[in-house]
Length: 377
Image (cartoon, rainbow, N blue to C red; front, side, top):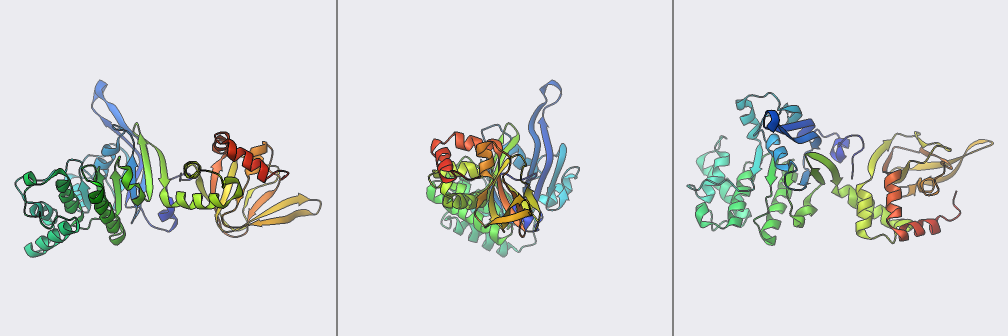
């Protein structure tokens, strides 16, 4: 679901502070005539326990974003806050301190060929005050969770590509970091191994209150995401909150006018909807206003009022999951009533152009709307 005005998300609404926060971030490669911009005005906040999957074509800036978030490259322009610290302007030692709380999963695993699997994983613990026994036990436990208990004493040259990738995942997770940055973590894995990895990442996000950013083209793992962020030509073009999208589809499916929509049509509509919040007694729109939005109630109640000789008259109370505002858009007419929040009201909102595009693209949708609301003012 698109965010209204900023990508605050549901976690922000619950009072949580972001673990990673990009704000107005721009980045370039090269100098002079060879200077090329790869990231444009990026705004993205990642919250505790949240998994974001980042998609987009090759060369769109996804890996550059991960590298900046991990403190592996200096911030040039804009703001990047990681674990409560502004990354721009930090010295090398300060960046090292922050990287201790970050787990990296690189696309090409980057294992040390001279070390065994368990020794590669133990390296992530070397900067911390664990005993040799504790480091070994923790590394062995993490490798076992990834099905590598029988391969932990093998060097990378004796491991398959998928086994090497799982060792890299174990190395990233063993220190229980607050942030995981993963570049194609399941690309070298079969379906079963890939599922083990993403389930472990999901478990880690919840247990450690961690934020995880996964760059991937693997459609098999989209179900673990809380958000799907699409990056094209260095710009974030959409951010879809998966749980919210499913909730919107559930609401829409129960409305007669959407009953015949396919799951893909409902999902497309849901992903274009924004979130708005109104306090008790606030007016959403007045009778006679031009119609510019379609509304779906997420939480709370709204009252529909008609302006008559004796003032406003209550004609209906709308509940959670009900829609309003569609007929003004359908008929290209001003609002026929005033709608006001009864209590704190949360709404999903679709703009006029997106609403009209949805009905224009679906003859059955348009016909069903007109049949259902024939004669409604």
